[in-house]
Each structure stands twice: as structure tokens, then as C-alpha cells.
Length: 258
Ligand SMILES: Nc1nc2c(ncn2[C@@H]2O[C@H](COP(=O)(O)OP(=O)(O)OP(=O)(O)O)[C@@H](O)[C@H]2O)c(=O)[nH]1
Ligand SMILES: [Mg+2]
Image (cartoon, rainbow, N blue to C red; front, side, top):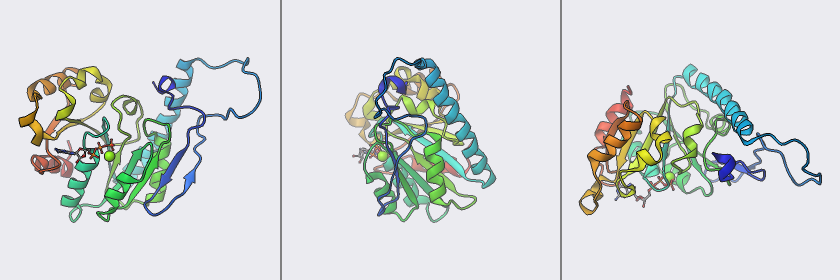
């Protein structure tokens, strides 16, 4: 997991920003600094122990987030996918079509830049950007900090766009009600069996960029068959964030999630 991909490294810095604001926050959660001079012959925990510690800490904070969301009746979605599958595009389309009917808040996760938060801010939706630095996923304490800054109204919807990565975010519960995995038609239909954890831990699978189907060899039946192999309970929506095709079915679910 992240111990091997390096995203839990000691010099990791997380910034929690809203558009127009530059505020750097040193996230020292579970790491300790190595800029001191001491020999490293003391006992180091095994990777398995460190992973357990990180996930335990994450689960505790996720439960705390979930309690807060439940108490305020905030419906929370964790959007996960590979980089570029269309998470922000689907958010933009959804928010522009539904923002007059529902109260939305957004947390954006990326390693760097305010790009995605600026796209959401342009729609006048309250948004916070979390920059994870070297981190390849969001963790529940980052969401906890961002939620405090967002000051979310009761009975609203919180959309959390995770860092583009089809592996590590699957292990980190953020306290969300539903996890929505997005796969786009350009990625190939075998992704659910190559990266099963993400599809296994999700409730909904959005298949995006269906406007490109005439130009690709993407097999829609096959991708669903593979996804159902790893998670027989997955619900599917076929959409194009660009043309808007299929979005109505997704909105129907969003208004009355099952
Ligand atoms: N043709 C087509 N292009 C799309 C569609 N949805 C998104 N795109 C394009 O795909 C690219 C990536 O879209 P984003 O929405 O930024 O993807 P993302 O998943 O948010 O990317 P990261 O945040 O970097 O992980 C952009 O160039 C979009 O215009 C779609 O339905 N059809
Ligand atoms: Mg994005």
C-alpha cells in the first residue's frame, strides 16, 4: 500500500485551501520528522504494523466524520477513479444542473494545484481544495479539517473528489455514505479485474465518456461483467459529462440513493 508507494513519507505536506486563499498547513499526523541526527539502529515497526496503525487511525476519524454527517443529515459521496476519468467534469455537470434544487458542498483532492477547486468555485459552490503533496489519496482527518472550514448546512450533499488513483483511496474510509467509482471508456474494460479493491469497495460505478464509444473498442457488457465479478451489488450509470447523455438517471439516484 502507501508504505511501498511512498505516499506516507516523512516530508509529506498537506495543504487545505479555498480558492483565493493560500494557507499552508503542515500535516504531521502519523509521521515523524527525520531531519534530526540519530542513528537508526532502534527498533522500527514492520510495514504491516505501520499499515495497521495508519488504517486504525483513519477508521477512527472516519467514524467521527460519519457521526457528524449523520447528525446533520449531510449525504456524503466519495468520488474515486484514475486520473482524468472525468470526476470533476461529472461534478461540474451535476452541480450546474442541480444546484438550484439541492445544497452542495465540495472537497477536492489533488496532489497539487487549485485547478479543480477553481472549476467548482466558478459555479458558486462552496469548495475546499486539499493538496496532499506526495500523498496519493485522501484520509479521514484531512476531510475532518476541510469540513470544519466548509461549515456545511444541515440536509445538504457533500461531494468529495478523491485524488486520481485507482488503488490506494480504496483503503481509506472517509466517513462517506456512498463510494462512487468512475471508469471512462478510454481506460479499457479490464480495469475492474486489474484493480478489484476499488470496485469491490464502491456502491456505484459511473461509466463516463460514452460519447467516445463510436471511436473505441470498449465493450460495455464486458466491463459490467468484470465489475460484477468483484462486486455483484454494483449499480451502473452510463454517462457522458460532455454531452449530458445518461446524466438524468444518475440525478434520479442522487435524489433518492439506494
Ligand atoms: N469526450 C469526453 N471527454 C470527457 C468527458 N468527461 C471528461 N472529459 C475530459 O476528460 C479530461 C479529464 O476530465 P476531468 O474531469 O478533469 O477528470 P478528473 O477525473 O477530474 O481528473 P483528475 O482530477 O486529474 O484525476 C478533460 O479533458 C475532460 O474534458 C466525457 O464525458 N466525454
Ligand atoms: Mg478532477
